[in-house]
Amino acid sequence: MDARIGCHRGAGTINQQLITGLGYPFREYAFLYRDNTGARAGGETGWPDPLIGLKFEANMLLSNYPKTLWAAMICKQYGYNGAANSRGAGVPVGKEDGVYLLNWNDDFFLSKPGGETRRSYLVTSPGSNFIFNGAMGTAGNLYSVVNYVAPGGGGQARSNTAALTGGS
Image (cartoon, rainbow, N blue to C red; front, side, top):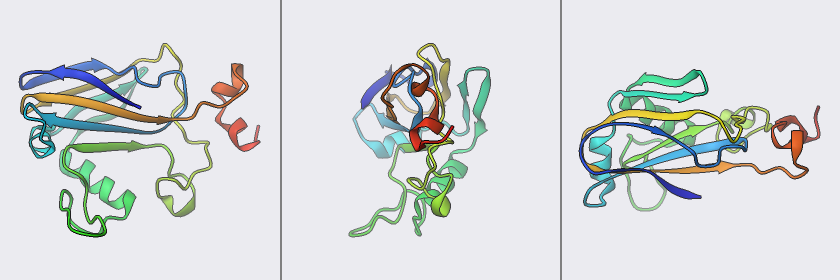
């Protein structure tokens, strides 16, 4: 699912409520920033450094998070053996420009995204407060893509991630 969360024309601070996928347990949340020409390289240059904060409900998920640290964590989580933002022919060796990820699906096998018990998903409700706050260095657009789970059964099954695995 792809949704533009901020049609941001000029450089400056985005303090935006994120609404994509609220009400379902999140596996991953991806941010993509493109400069006003549509280039991701410009989006990488303009990405907030540090990110002021990413707040969920009353808790800060990230606060004053440096861009280089976030990029290094992405490289470690996905097993990239090259420097961040370096790409080459064949096997990807680094993080894509302008793309920053949050994972809640790396709690089990090899501690990599996709190795999950489904018990560490970020459980949200339709009225959850999820806010991105960052000082963008260049004019552009910020997009978000969320990978969430929509369990069947409605009611409590929707927020009970243990029910996804047959647990209680």
